[in-house]
Each structure stands twice: as C-alpha cells, then as structure tokens.
Image (cartoon, rainbow over all chains, first blue to last red; front, side, top):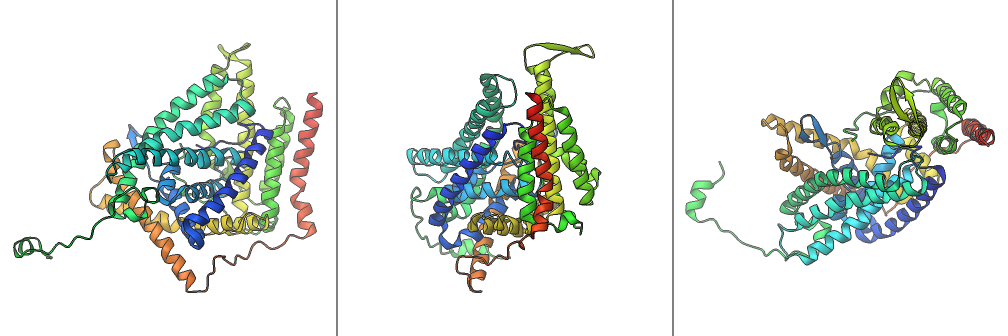
Length: 237
Length: 255
C-alpha cells in the first residue's frame, strides 16, 4: 500500500526525498561491493523478480488475499544494499509507470518500504541466524521472524513522518496503534511467505542465499553409487 | 492492498504531450504535484482550477477521461481511510443527513481525497503519454545515478519476461489440478516464488555473460532522452508555473 500525494505535507515530503537520495547513494556503493560489475543486470533482474513476486496472490480466506512486500526477502537473498536498491527500483517504476504511489510521497515510500525494512530486517535476521544453531532448516525461521518484525517497524517510521508532517487531525498515538496493529497482521503474512520462500531457495541453491553466507557448514561432496538392487527398482524409465 | 499490476498505462500516440521530451514532463509533473500538495485545503477554487488544467492537459494528450478515471482505483485503500475519517476525528461536529460527523474529519478527508486524486491523475497522465523507455531516458537526463538508470532499464526490459515466467508456473500448477484456496496452500506458492527467484537470478547471470561477450565493461551505453529545445521547455513549464501561481494565490487568499 503506497502512500499517495497529500497525506504528508510538502516540506516533510521533500525532507524524506532528500533522505531517500542519500540512502540510494549509500546503497549504490554497498551494492557495488556485493555484486561488483555484475550489479546492474543482476539487481535489475532481482527488481523484476520482486515486482513479479508481488503479483503472486496468497489467498487468506473468503475472497481476500495478500501479497509479498519483499524487502526482507530481497535483502536475505541478494544482500542488504542490492535488496534495498531493488525495492527502490520497483517503487520508482510503480510511481512513474503505474501511477501507484504519489510522486511527492516517493521519498516517504522509499525510506519506509525499501530502507527501513532492509536496514532493520537484515541485521536482525543475521543476529537471529548467528544466535541460533547453524542448521539449514532454522534459517527460514530467522528470515520469517525478521520479516514479521520489520513490517510494523517500517509502519512506525511512517508514523514518525506522520507526526512531523501529517495532514490529518488524529493523535499520533492512535495512528501509531492502528498502523502497528494492521501491519502486525500484514507482517504475519509477510513472515510466512518470506520464510517459505527462503526455505525453498535454500533447498535448491543454498549458494545463492546471500544472508546464509558464513552461517552454513560447507556441504561435503557425497558419492552415492547405486547398488544393483536400487538401480533395478528405481532406475530411469 | 494493490493486487496485480499487470496493466500498462502507456497509450501510444503522437500528441504534443507525447512528443514532449520525457525529462521535461517528469520535472513538470513533480513541481506541479508539489504545488498541489502545498495548497491550503480551504482553497476549494484552487483544486477546481487544478482539475480543469489537468483535464485540459489530458485533452492535449488525447487521453480519454474514462481511462484516467478507471485507473484512479489505485488510491482505493486511501479513499476508504478518508471515508472513515469524519467518524474517527473528534472535535466539533456537524450533522449531515442525520449522521453526526466531525468537522475536522471532513476537512481532513477532503484534503487527502482532493490531493491524492489530483496526484494520481497527474501520474496517470505522465505514464500514459510517456513510454517506459522514454521515462528511463528522461531520468538519465535528470542526472539520476547511472547505475540506478541501468537497473531501471534492466527491470523494465525483463519485468514482462519474469512475469510470464510466473504465469507459466501458474499454468503448470493449475494443469496439475492445484488451486490455492487458503494459507494451507502457501507453501506451494512460496516454492513458485523461490523458483522464480532462482530463474531470475540465473537469467541475470546469463544476461551479464552475454553482455560481457559483447564488450560490456560495467557501463551500459544508454541513449538517454533527446535534449529539449527552449520552446519545449517553455511549454512544459506552463502547467507547473500556473500550479505554483494558483497555490501561492491560495496562500495569500487564506491569510
């Protein structure tokens, strides 16, 4: 759900835009470290992936459905800087090509959905994963918890923008309660989807999961020579 | 929650608005929306002016009002929020059709609805008259970091490819009798998302290798938008200039 124009006043929107510009600068330097000269094509494709994954509808009950936001997922899969850049790119495309999210609110949207989600979610994920036993099946749990917490935290930062430049005469505490309440609910969905997706990638290509680097034991090469009995029963058709 | 976003807004055409260089349009739209957002809410006439001016711009661009209205649904969640405001905000109340509503809440709802709607219309107009490639070229001319422009270019180039990948997975799931009905089926959908990530990442690697073999050295030679003539600039700044003037006038009148 992107913030439209007119929800946050003009000076605060401009300030958020300035923060977003600085954040993008920081991420650009970081992303070059994560991906070196492969940055543009890979990060572009990751952005396309986030964009497409948001189209995947997860049915909840009786006709309602939710979809992935993807900030924490992207950060865990490709690294925090590239992940934040990918989400920023998605938000830019949505605002400029799909009229989704106000042009003046672009700064607020980028700061909350791309930067806060990743800047909070990724370190939290690493901390959890570092504290847990080093097991492949526990990393998705850490990813889910990080996603669960990062969504309400991002909504709290939005409340921060609102308290500075909100255009509605509602008390900050009631807006904070409503926002965090709703986003806790959204966060649960985000957590389940993020956890399950990380689990499915880790099963197939653990080497691709940036957030798992240095946390998983190296897989040993294992030779499985079929014995005549197994070859007879389960061979190629 | 905005479900899918598969519908492209760009409608090809050759109107003056279409032919205006993208960077002038992006900058004009940004200044215009800022002027709208900065307008004091009591200046109802100003918002009327904005709507009329946008209508005129849509006419110049050959964009049908129906298209604009149809795409305004992206702001639906916030309309819902705005409709609730007169009931949520406290303070002085007025009775409308036998229902007690907060005066402040009504004013807040009007403020959000008017500005958000004008903002969405502006974005729709920009997106409808500027092709994705032109938007990217325009952003490059606006001095966006080259890496961001390259990422945007790759994303726009491959968004449909990746979306079609996802669609093929859906067809594969459904042809095996799968239909997602509730959270019980999320695992399968998430596996699709995981598979989509692996395919996208590997596609990125292949694209990179293909580019290396064609002499890529870390910087994509993007053409960028053609420079704007002084005449085109003067046309492009007309709308935001009027917007800023109206906004300033509204401020003076509100004092």
